[in-house]
Length: 256
Image 1 (tube, helix red, strand yellow):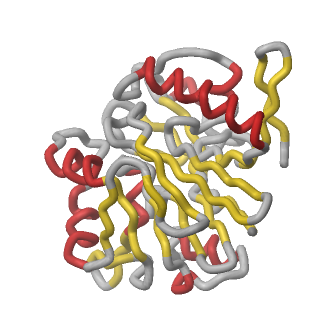
Image 2 (cartoon, helix red, strand yellow):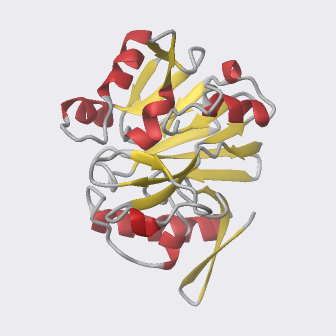
């Protein structure tokens, strides 16, 4: 297997849920009080059978008007039209807005050849929510496309890819395991978005169930250390890929 970070950039986000580009070299965090500062890493994985996209970022374009996600897929050596599976951990705008792009003033699927895998409960909750975290105009395009595949609970997409209902960050958040031979990639979405969250045990207020998310992080860390998983960290400020080890009840994350 091959895995690639499709880094979309660094942003600040405040209570308005607007994501504003943030360049640490020239921007000052003090000017954006009350904001969280995050990096965004959608991931691309090439297996023997599939070209898989894990979450789709903000769906922004670069200064030349090119869709950043497509640009980064090309840099990785692939054609965006070759993506045949889009796996969504959940539907918050920083993870799902890149499902579509705007062309000639209209929204259309960014990956029209792909099957989009979404948890049924997350889909239903997103439509019924009044939160600014969800952009239903994006979902409308997918709903009309015929490319939407709703799943429930735990299950397999094929022999290499399985999903698990986690339910910590959102009520129907899901995580993914992709295995081929001796390689095992784990994508925890916002249940395990940064390696630092393995090092510091805490319940986050931004999670649907902070205590459950905290326990899940420890559970995933223990499994990753025991089974040699490569973890994909969607919001990592440093390395987006990591292997986990545990010594004297303390997690350590290193480059794979």
